[in-house]
Amino acid sequence: MTLEDKIENLLRPTIETMGFQFWGCEYLPAGKHSTLRIYIDNAELGVNVDDCGKVSRQVSAIMDVEDPISNAYMLEVSSPGMDRPLFHPEQYKAYEGQEVQVRTSSPVMGRKRFKGVMSQVSESDIAVEVDGELYEIPFSLIDKANIVPQF
Image (cartoon, rainbow, N blue to C red):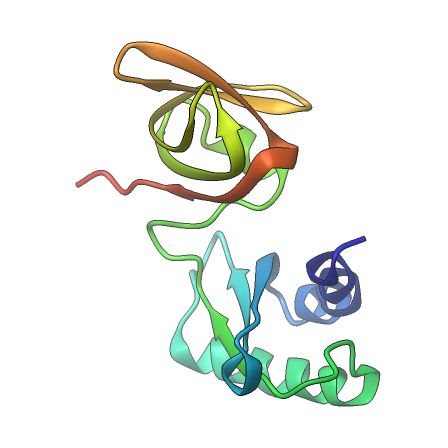
């Protein structure tokens, strides 16, 4: 279980009780300048700055008591925004057919960065079409994936 999984298990119940969806989290270690970013959403009402502040206070209290991160870090609570990061297979499935940007930890067919239409989502991977070529990318290799907003 990753640190992000532990944090999600710790915070999800409280955030959902507050009326928000726990979209995901990422921990960016950088010594004294480390960041824990929590993404929340509300499909019906969206998320505003006051919502982020309320959730931040609750999350901060829980993190202080449970202390899953032993060193200093900056806590950020945010909406996933239009270029929303994708964390879970069901999130990928919801955006099937849309353009995504994906970075992998290891090369897939010779490349680590992909930007194209996510044409298929299965239990174990996604298929992204880039320049007419289809790449099957296992979830286990995805470091970061975001929706590419369309205007």
